[in-house]
Image (cartoon, rainbow, N blue to C red; front, side, top):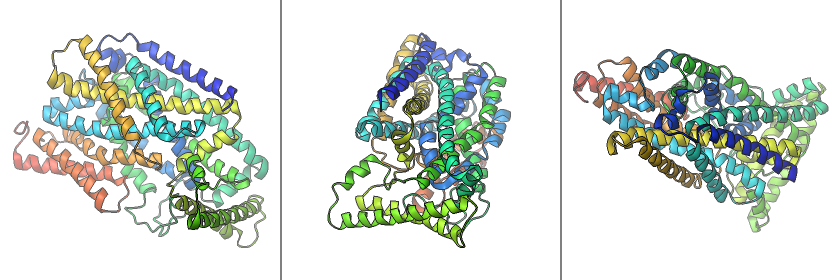
Length: 571
C-alpha cells in the first residue's frame, strides 16, 4: 500500500461512516434506533437490501468463484425475482399491518410467545454464525495488506463494525449501504475495465470470449447432471456427483434457493428491518423489487470479473499459491514435503505454459487439432498442481485470496485504495446490519417481552447498546475459528441449516389457519433436527436444506395440529 492508496481508502471510508453515524446519532427511542423512525425512502431501503447481499463476501468470494467456476454461481440467483414477487404479495402486507419491530413479533400474534421466542432464538444462532463469516472476509484483505495474521485482523474489523453500529443504529446502516453500493459498483466497474483493457489488448474482444468459453467460464446454466464435473472444487480434483449432491445447477438455482431467498428476505431480521424502516407497504415492495431485478446483473459482473482475472493470469504468470500465509510456509519446508512441493511447482509451470500456448491459438481462431482438449486438460492440470502444492504445505483452500492477491500486486494505487474502501464499506454495512438485527431481536423478542416489559426508552436504548457490543464480541470470537473455507459457500450453508425451518413456521402462519402454536414450534424443532441430521449423515447439496427444512416443518406442524387439536389448543 502506497501513500496514495492509503489516502483514497481512508478518505472514502471516513466520509461513508461519518455520514451514516450523523444521520441517527441522536436516536432517542427504540423506534428511531431500530427502524430509523420508519422514514427511510424506498430506494434507500432497496439499496440497503442489495448491499447486504453484495457484501465483502460477495466481492472476495464471488471473484474467486468466477475465477474457478466461471458464471455457474449465477444460477444461485435465478429464483430471486420469483421469491421477491411472492414476498411482495404475501409477506409485506403481513408485516406492515402491525406496528412491529421484528419479524418474530408477528408470530406471537398468530401462535403465542413460545413460538415467537423459539423462532427468534433460531435466527439469533444462525445470524451470529453468518455474521462471523462477514467479519472474516475483510480480515482476509487487511491481513494481505498489512502482513498481520488473520486472527488480529478479525478482532480489529469486529471492534470497528461494532463501534460504528452502536453509535449509528439502523439509520446509519441503511445510509452507509447506499454509499457502499455506489463505491462497490464504481470500484468493480473500474477493475473490470482494467482487466478488459489487458485481455482484449492481447486476444481481441472475440478472442476473450473464445478463450473463456473454451475454459468453461461462460457456462451460466447447467440443466444436465454430468457424471463428472468440468470445474472441480479448488481443494480437490474432479469428483463424481449426483442430482442431489450437485450444488450449482439450474434445479438448485430454481428450487433450492427459492426457499433460501423466501426465508432470507422474508423471515431474517437483517432484511425485514430494512422493510420495516420504509415509509409504507408500497415502499417496502418497491425496495424488494429493486433488489430482485438488479442483483443478477451485479452478480454476473462480479463473476465475469473473476473469469477475466483467470485469463489475465493465463496470459501471464499465475501464482502457485495465492495466500501470503501459505507462501511463507514454503520457506520452512524440508524433506519429502519440500520435494512434493517442488514437483507440484514444476507441474504447475508446465501446465500454465501449455494453457497459455493453446489458449492463444484458440483465441486467434487458429487452433491445431486437439488444442481444445489440450487446453481444457491444462486448465485441470494447473488446478490439480495448485491443490497438490497446498497439500504439501498443509494448507487449505486459498480461493478467498485470489482477488486480494491481484489487487495488491497489480492494480494502480488509486484504484487499489478505492477497492479496499469498497470492501471495507461492504464489510461495515453488512456486519452492522447483522449486528443491528441481532440486537433488535434480542431486545424486542426477549428483553422487553420477558425481562423488563416496562423498561423506559432511555433504559432500553442503553441496554440495546450493551447487547450490541455482546453480539459483536460473540461473532468476532466465532470468526477467529473459521479458517480458510470458500466464503460464499460457508455463509450460505450456515443459513441453509436454519432458514428452511424458520420459513416453515411463517408458512404455517400464512397458509394453515388451524395450525397451533404447539404445532408450529414442534415443526420448527423437527425441521432443524432433520436438516442437521441430513448434513451430518448424507451427501446432499446444502441448498436443498432450505426446501427440506420448510417441508418437514410444515408437514410436522400440520400433523401435530391434526393430532393435538385446532388452533388455540396448544398456545
